[in-house]
Length: 565
Image 1 (cartoon, rainbow, N blue to C red):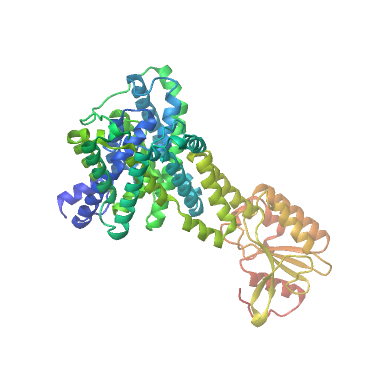
Image 2 (tube, rainbow, N blue to C red):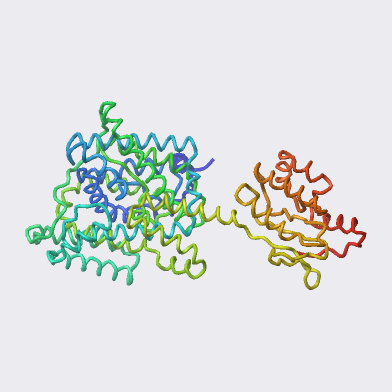
């Protein structure tokens, strides 16, 4: 019957297969991930205009909720810079940051976001992730890496940065360079050097944890705050309490657009991030299950006094780097953070902001997949342009706009291939093999016969090309035009009318139009649009050989041995 404890664990975490050895490894990875995520969550809370402790709240119940209801084994759902910025931009005109009303507005936004995500799950909108190719994903994460890296430069240099837009952040930092806080810069450089060195010589040692612990100890011992190095400051301790963001309908109505923007960001960014790691580790990704997990996580955030949570590319990268391979890692993070909230929050007041920025900056560097972009450029320049454009829009405009643009450009690229598909005329080459030759006037399969291959579904946008190209192929002496319909999976209403007009015009010239290599899924379209009747049932063949045999029979010629293609 199996171990009852293992069975209960499987039921709790979506029936994932677990073993004691894997549980231990993933739990240890969770401890390392918690050490890296806690400072980052504090920073994201500041971006959102929320009390610092609410950033830690996002690493408790919301993380467990996603681990329970979501599908991705790597996606870390917690506070994120993108949704934090959207939240702050939308709520700041309605209430002062950090006030009780602001916190209530943030909680209701998270609750509305959860409702919209649940609706997306019911409508099964997870398919939107299918429009994100590997090319787009490489560009997306590279753009996020640049965006996050630039966002923390101010903290590393000890400079105040007040804007959330990447370009404006760079401009603000450039103007403030004469006022660089040299102790902060030196400490940032020291943290970078320590982490990079440890990563190289001892990759299994949790270098970020050592850097954070060392910085806190040094700050407490030598009073970094008194020496001009900005620190996090006091952090309220204790576990989160269950709350209900009690607001009136007028408040809720004003929050709907903000929640809608968060949903677009969450669906796009979480799906993109989860897809990256599913592809990297050859795992199946269930986007609809992830939507349910994201809805549960945001509901949990709302009910525990936190704010909108999202699939975080930076924290997901840290989860992979820590060696975690299941939701046990996420549960371990929640347990560690809960212990920190109860016993250790007093220590975080000494954490220098520049150290937090340096840790996040290292993660941002690893998100920038320059090697992947270089490989795409070598193999497919057009797709490289798509990846580069995605990264550029993420940096210059925003993550949400970058993903949406990438999806639109991906779709347009697909439509372009269908709008102008590959076409050819089949000819017999050496040793009786079929070969493809460009479909230009004068190209013949043999005297009197043209076998024309059309490499896409036949629909309103490419029907004109189909008709025009066949008309140009009909030179004096051509008696039959055989359409190799193997690649044609569908014919729509407009294309069917074009084919019927084409058949009629060719018949007036004494030329027979034939469809061959017709697949079973195409025949219903031919029947529904009356093409079977218009062409004639005896002019539609299952194979090219059958069509060739019919042509030879009408021409009184013997059928040669079957060619290969």
